[in-house]
Image 1 (cartoon, rainbow, N blue to C red):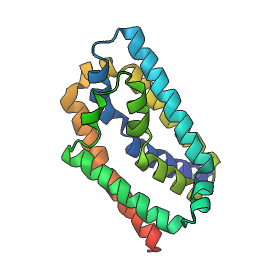
Image 2 (cartoon, rainbow, N blue to C red; image 1 turned 90 degrees about the vertical axis):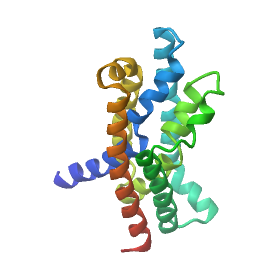
Image 3 (cartoon, rainbow, N blue to C red; image 1 turned 180 degrees about the vertical axis):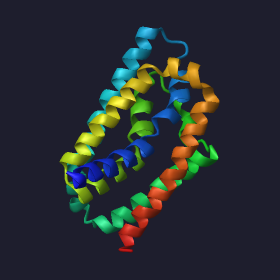
Image 4 (cartoon, rainbow, N blue to C red; image 1 turned 135 degrees about the vertical axis):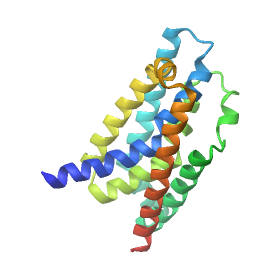
Length: 193
């Protein structure tokens, strides 16, 4: 029982950190500010639905995709760790890589679902977690994370009203620091340290 709890926590928190849903609250809010509440809720539902499809696709078939391309899990851990490290540094330093292009989309759900919710970092993380813990525990961790994503996006206006832009920025940067440490762990595991 202790192993299952530890495995779940070791699956849940990396996904939670790399998704960085609290960092997305201001972006989602700015994209949705001219929409009615019902449309904001629809877009939160749609973004979560699309993110779920992508996440589960790579959770169940990511290792097979690696096999087809002849990529070892060790190499993928190193590459995934580097990607997650870059994402963590982007969060910590407040760099914009994707945010500038988001305003060009007419629908917010697609850029929120991917690449912001399920991008390279989440894909890398979920494939590595499946390698470590099998399918069931990462699946449960992913479902709970997606539920949190849906709740946070659905109530983003209320959350932003309570904690403000600065509060979400602080939470996001703390998660970014932990994310960079997680990236180093993935890289070390890839090298076999």
